[in-house]
Length: 114
Length: 113
Image (cartoon, rainbow over all chains, first blue to last red; front, side):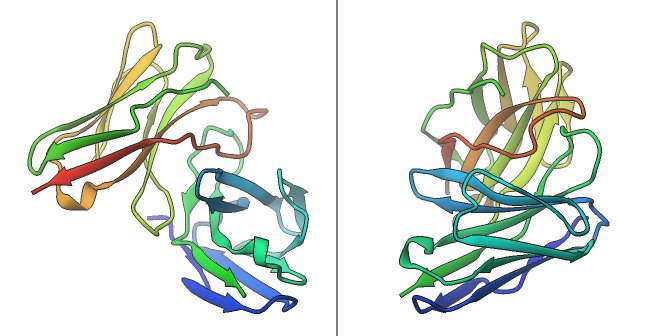
């Protein structure tokens, strides 16, 4: 079974802090994604990566950056956290090739910025 | 990707089959039907997908109508742990297909004891 893990289930940070969210997958997937999920807004793509050191902006990249130094790990960075970044953050991975392949999600990190 | 329509909520008794409908009348020939679910405060979980034939796996069955304009997800013996929001998604196939997943409002399924 594919396993996607995220570093924290719950995180509380203060405005202005730098925040790192880590995601690791164990199935050698090429593609990895960071989404945020908010009530009434559904799932929104922040960034995705289709290979090591490669990244593409999603729909809402402002205020975020990412890092993919190793195939299995994809990090989301909030350079200076703000209260409007309070959200559920979801990491997903998918093997490369045909885009119909399934995305597998981690358990999510619920981030609160005070 | 084609738009889908699902009922906002459904109830089902524990042990019975839960049948969740989805309409996707604008689906095109290379689009697959996917089902995911999300249990409260957890990440979404893949359930099943199909193109035109009916599919079955250890979690569920997917019935797609012959004209492909609608489908039904069947959980054959629902348990309390199946209480979740279920999302029906239609996604284009092929290498150039969309990368991201977009969930609609889904169906909130409640399994009652």
